[in-house]
Structure formats: structure tokens, C-alpha cells
Length: 496
Image (cartoon, rainbow, N blue to C red; front, side, top):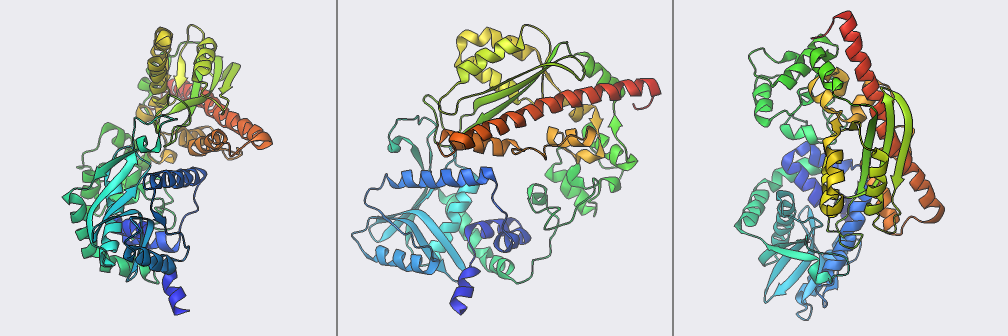
């Protein structure tokens, strides 16, 4: 029983690396893990597939696959002692309170090379830290590590190529060993924090801003007055405010310099009502040419390309929704397109889109994403470049209204349509089967992979169309509301 209890509370890579940033986050990772989302599960499956393909480069390797850590660690030791085994996959090390798995361990005389397989294209600090953790635990377990490397995806890979062309190896430099040394120094304090029965007391740090636990399982935050609600909050401004013991926007002293955008947010929070720049908003909306075409794209991408002539992680536009209005809020038409998941239908999509967009009128989008995708189409289909450039010239980014002219305390410092739409109009995505872009990507990718077929695929297609349609209909409703706000301000003479 003692052994089983000990096994359950070993520190793994995720809890250790999170605890390096914040002890509370490390503890929560270990004791209160999040349920993976649809997108998370797809990325895990992709990771497993990439791991399998990486192992195919080492034809004589042995795989450690026992689910119990201690038994897997014993199996690893046995194979390390057997000189006829040149490579070990998922080599497992259990030492003190730590557990780690090396994706590939390659024998080099009496020493070993440690290889971490990742599904990204470029080496980054997160990947090196992952490898440094494994290096630290392996060395603690007595492994003589001679060298280490990341095995990443090659951006030149295309479907049909050999697995050897899928990967590029990046040899570790001295920096990696230095990171492992730093980890070694803090390991005892991290073990105490992560394995303790009580959650470590949370402390507000800049990393809280991007932590999924902030405002939920950790530091409570249910109002719209937190300094994290300041748009583009820099680390230096955060440090300045926390050094003054200020964590609420309403408490920011007058002498602290804010950007015009941040000051607008501060005024809205202090006043408890929306901040609206009436002249700016009216002039901005005046530039819309009718009829207006409200456009939203959805895309799919994967580490291992799904279609010919597509690179790893390349975004493929798979669908669009297009509402056409002849005046604010007055829909006259709706067009949509959803590609067949069995093939690359970008050409058909672009041709239908150009037809649906007609010759004139503003193309209203939300963010710069559609512009990026239209420009990528122009590179892909040079003969359509002129027509696509005309479309780019007609683009009108509705999000700019919320970045520059309208701020509601309920936006919590953000301008995403998932925030502005429910706050200003009341529409939400709650009733939909697919409610966010990550889930949409995952569902479409599952169809491409042949994991969703038949009736289920028909249902998914229906749900994808409904989700994309909600985005463009939401833009119609938001635009209509902005026009109403700008007109009511003019009549009442309120706002600035």
C-alpha cells in the first residue's frame, strides 16, 4: 500500500515545469488536472503518431510500454544493461520523488544520447525545458548522458515522403545543461510544494495572466477591475503596479503612465459604464460601403500534413460563412461553403467566394485573419491574385471599433467577438454543439483522418456550418448595435 501511495504522488514533467513558474500551478497540475479539450485530445493523438514515426528511424530499438512506472523503470534498466539493445523508446526513470520518460535513448559506448520528439517546427524554450527536466531525472537515476537533442518536424516535409524526411534534429548546446543545473538546484523546494497535502498559498505574478487557473481554482477574480484587464499590459507596468501594492485598475495612481487604450479602460472601470469615443466611432463606421459582406473563415492545420502540396502546420481554409446586408442589421442573403474533408478544396472555395463577394461593397471581418488567408490564396493561385487583391482592398475590420472607440467593463480587457457579442448584444455560442475555433479545427481534422464518418460526419458538417454562421451573424448584430450606439450618442450629446 505504501508503494502504491508513493507512486500516485510522484512528480512528473508537467507538474515540475509548472511549479518552476509558480508553485501553486505545479500543485494544481498534480492534484487537480484539467479535463483535456477536443483540441487537446487531437494534439495528443498527433503527438503519439509523431512519436511512432520517430521510432521508425531507429529500427532496432525496444519500446518500454508497461503502464506502471516502477515496472517500466525496471524494464528500462534491464535493456540499458543489455548491450545488444542499441536504442530504447519511452525509457522510464524513477528516482526520489521524480518520474520521467525519454522519447528515445540511444546507446553511445558506455554513455547515452537523449532525444526529445516534438511536433513543432522550430526549437523553443518550452521544448528545451522539457528536455532539461528529462535530463535532470535521467542523471539523478545514474544515466551517463553524453549528448541530447530535439527531434522536430521539418517544414519541407510533404505527404508521400519518407519518415526520414519528416524530422530535423537540433543538437543541444551548453544552455540545456545549464537549465538542468538550475532545475537541480530548485528541485527540493519544488518537490515540497508539489507533493504537499496543502495547496501552496498563491502569489500574484505576471504569469498568472495566462494561467488557466487564475480567477478559478487559484486567486479569485470575479470583477472587471483587475489590472490583468488592461489591454497589452507589459511586465514592467505590472511590476510597477504590484510594487505599489496595486492590483485593481480603479486604484492605479494618477502619476502612472498608461497608453491611451489602457487609460480608456481605466476610465470605463472607474466610471462603471462604457467608454465611447463618439467622433471616432462615427467616422469609423462611415467608411462602410453598402451592400456589406460579413465574412468569416475556418481553417484546419496539422503537424503531419493532410493533403498533397501542404506543409506541416500550414493553415488550410476549409469553410466560410458570408452574410450580405444592404443596411445595418438587414440581411438579404447568406452564403456558405464547407470543403469535402476527403480532399483539398481550396480552389473551389476561392472561386465560389469570389462569386459570392460580387464586385463592390465593404467586406466586414473581425481581426486581420481573413486578410492573411486571402493573401495566402493569392500566392497559391497567382492567376486569381488581381481579384483577391480587390477583395483585400475592400476589407473592413470591425474589431477595430472595440480596440479604439468602444470599451465596456464587461469586455475584461479583451476585444474578441466571443466577449463583445454576449456583452453588447446578448447573443452567445452556448446552444451550439461546436462553440470555439479549436473544437472546429479538431472536428474537421478527425473527418480528414477518417475517424468521423457516415452519419456522424453529416452531423459534424451541420455543426461546423452553424458555428461559422454564428460568427458572421454575430458581426451583423454587433455592427448594427455600434451604429445604434453612435446615433444615440449624437442625439443625446453624450460621450466624448
